[in-house]
Image (cartoon, rainbow, N blue to C red; front, side, top):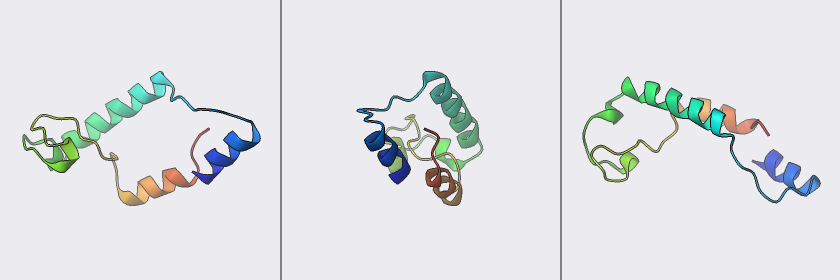
Length: 75
């Protein structure tokens, strides 16, 4: 995240907006990932914001994968 903040500061960027095409791809990938897990069963857990059929709001992958992705974000 420091790289993103530094880029914004150096280039005088006021905000970032995710690309919708990439956001959609990420959403489809997340849906496919979670179909293989127990997180999609009908229960009102914290990662579904208490909704039994809610959207899973956690990273679709391991913590190690998330940490690697966060080390060098695409900007």
